Length: 424
Image 1: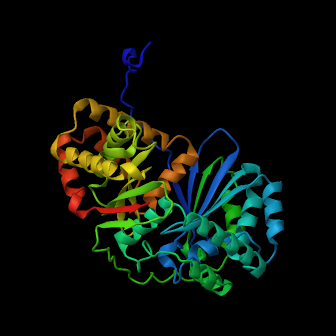
Image 2: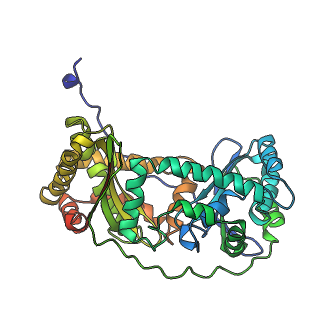
Image 3: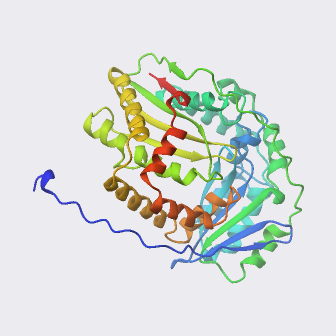
């Protein structure tokens, strides 16, 4: 059967979902612990979250480097011993450092609960930041940095955030080769002592949870001296670039990276769910307008997307694509054309129905099992929001009208406010 002869399957509305309940307990030293029980496998996901992201650092690379060095040696174990223990117990771990937070995630069999928290205590409270391992890590990071600096997508993304927030703001501050040379273990120890404390920590545990979990937590974590909550980071001011169109010349590049967007609201704003619906229509899934026009119809790129993201101090929206140098301006023109259409013409009912069902399905997947539920819980808990946020979000998906979307498109996608950053 030809493509034209195929009949699209019926799309049925997704029924309401009920996320697994979140239980909250506190350890003796005040560490809050959130428990999400569920699943059929004897596995746990354990996440330690600290307000220790890029926004808290006093010099570039301080937050991420401190986080990366946590498993490189402690008072009790060497780097190799830590890795051997993790392997022997089948513990998968992931360190992360983001703009607002830093942390550590473990995936472990429930029968190894005692051992994983004993290891976590060493890693999180007793790292020694050995000079040799620090030097090896920084050399690797510098090489990776120099490689990425040759990529147009890296150049465009870095300059985009600098344009939005300003080069002096932690969200927009660019990293240079000199920053890698200036950082030392003293900077890491200072950051660690300020921010890696029980007073600055929360724990989210999901999966099959053993009966004596709280006893284990108290033994390995709850008896640690809490310390004082870190001082709020110095007040930062956004100082976006007055120049809205920025071009970065990259000799020898055969493609151009496009970034078009601006700073915007975050999850705490009541318009945010509607903005997410609007963004999905524009470029947030495979059937979006940007994908249909610029990828499928015009063939300008293999992929183009738009996203709306939420940070603690702000939000941002961005349209991203990589295209051939020869058709860069054509692609940019089509992007603005799709934005203007959203501002002038109400979304048709067929498209509304498709997007409603796509987004409803995505919300169900966000709570598909205890691990996904834990990630979704963290995504709103970090902003001081309750789990009711998702019910309200689901209501917006199913009830928002074309006229409301038209209003949001004119309010948040004013083309005069958008930054246009091209590297190529």
